[in-house]
Length: 489
Image (cartoon, rainbow, N blue to C red; front, side, top):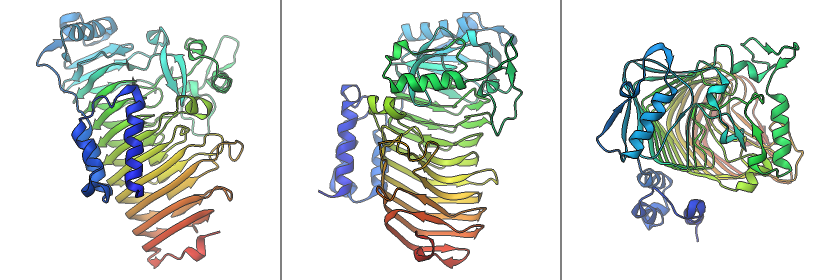
């Protein structure tokens, strides 16, 4: 059996296990994935994945939040009105909940099945910065760990056929007084620290450390209570265990934490979204333990990774044991962030079948174009990654695969990273390294192919440690052919 067929048989089998069926995916394209024409062509596989994703559609019924008592005066708290409109829409079989032109203050919004939250042009949903507006606690994931925490600003749990669409703005207001300072002391801090009545700095570290211990000690999730007083910032949009999710057209600004974080979802489409947030951990789009994801035509201007594919952290990720897989990313622009397309670092459940094409990246503050980050504490099986046609202006490091991220080599779960092909990556100005590949001697990075790629101007020598079966073809560095002999250690 060839490797390509093996990868996709495994993907389909894993998808079937998630929730008992491959919910939301049409059966015909899945058969096509294993047929002869697709089996030998990675990018036909990518097309088959896109075809198998079910984009939700909705009945032609509208529920204007004004009719439920909402007021776009930038003064009224509209949480009850918006959620009542969502409940009514759901109860009547679904449709669009309309956010009209105006500035509507709200707390947590909880989406229900068959509801499209639609923001008309000129509409702003302005989210409260009062933590009590995100209580009671909900079942959520935070940095790859399950817990009971503050509700995400927009949340859905075990729903299907849901959407957030339109030309309006979701304003998280996290750049004001509450959310970002909870990060505490940080080398990139551009926020004022907060103190309690005793003059102690308010920050997330104590609760974060305890949550890590709870997860390693297998404390039941319902006993991991980390809402009021824990200072763990909620993500902006988090559908959890949902099927058929669409996020389209909107602008998302100033998020407390990660901007879009679907967890354990099937059939997710994120398109034409503008991500704009420069706070701590302002990742743009982080699909986590999701199956069949399409991210396209988006603009990322973020304070952390633009796109980071994840699958749970450490013991908790291994307990849930669900990979992120069958993901297509295309036609996106990464303006600024820690990484353009990233896999990790919460990666213990593994990642496979990722296809990235036709993206642009350009910023002196963009730290890495392509990055995989893990270690022997987090582990994870990362395989069958395909990347092509990436145009990069200025970036610090171009391709980074690092087995020593954060905790270093301190665990017993060696990661497996293998079968990665990158074709037609063009970087005009690499401020530091074209390649930084750092595996373990006992557990090297395996089967890396880099073709038709050019790094026009590079500041520092590349580093390649413990990589087996590394193939390059038609690759230039500072306009000269790249030599593996010079960079491999």
